[in-house]
Length: 237
Image (cartoon, rainbow, N blue to C red; front, side):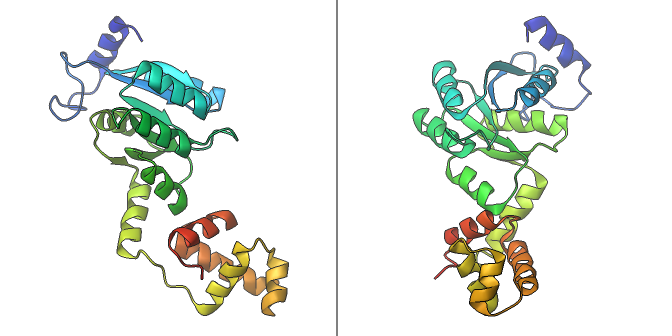
């Protein structure tokens, strides 16, 4: 976006949206330099158009893969990399976040923007060094505010993500019944519902019921997610 366009966008912003001194842009502040990473070209185009309307934010590069994002971050030294998590087989967003954070010495901040909000995804991204974690359902003004916060190293979390983080802090080891632990153990071996039912001498319907409860307790919605969280929290013997 050129300077004139940024000034026009800034003059049309609602009064009080981003007061000076509270993380928002003012007339004297430099724009937040941002690299956008998403492997879907249509999604990137939409985000580029959206970010082009944001005062005080300048997109300086776009990447369609993890390796490309890492290379752009090293070459352009942006303030923020807006990072999707699912980026194909070469390198996912979590690994790209880890490399960008490590190689920049923490000077480049990574803000995750994804549709995934499982405990496992959130934990891996934060442990990799992500400054914030947003869901793609956020309103544009919330995305813009999160980018500005990330640029100065402040944590930005979507409300559902913050809720999950707080719930995990309050109950770091969810209580599983003996049967749920048995099923989770069989699940970690890669067994199907039918095989688990045979191994434990129960019906497939019983297995499905327990799996639903396990998913709820672990905050996941897939078999792989349940196993990943169980390993992270040492729930498997």
